[in-house]
Length: 157
Length: 155
Image (cartoon, rainbow over all chains, first blue to last red):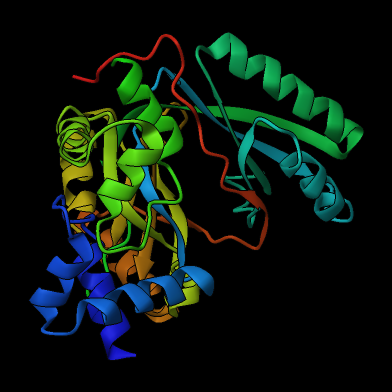
């Protein structure tokens, strides 16, 4: 729906910081404010909007060590084990991704955050315990800098 | 970062109301005023504690596509390459990481073809190969991190 797309384009840079932000979007689009609110509610309900709120810079919150742990896991067991790793309370994201041999042998990615690297390493050890012998190798790629974090931009092509 | 900042960051990561005066409604549940909440969010955005305030979209449910991608960039070319990659509006975020593959970014576009095209254009612009790591299965996504006691205002 074109209205939904226009609303997304208006909101993707962020919620207007005014008392009636949805009215501000409605005014810019020339539609009724109730219509904007009902379409945003519909997009929340069907999952096109995951959530609405604050997106923090993890570093600023004290999470200084951000490790992307990557694992070379036997293909036959990666889905069962990936679900188990994703269920660990401290894993923020967990995905299966393709290998890029010979440059990249890892097929399971699990993001782990800590106040320092020691905390990340302790959490990585718990992942290793879950994976056991099915993990043939692993590495942890620490982020050293956020180069860009703007989120989705529709209309970009 | 004071107690109210911490409350805003921790409790307002989700559930911002879809109402006529959402800042007023949120402020009441957080124990502050509408004006104060708007001013705090504005400051937290400007000082870098928040990178955004608003909706988070699920690209695939909007009909779009995205992938994680990585490059191995020589140190002396790193800043130039980061600027070239970041200049693409399809690059949603980009992190420097300690590894031979030292630049990791997410490319989002309205179609899978748009993602592939962007990856090719990044390769052409930078003269370096881009490895794509599209998600094959998602096991878990979405834990929201709280502010630690050691949190400080970002520079």
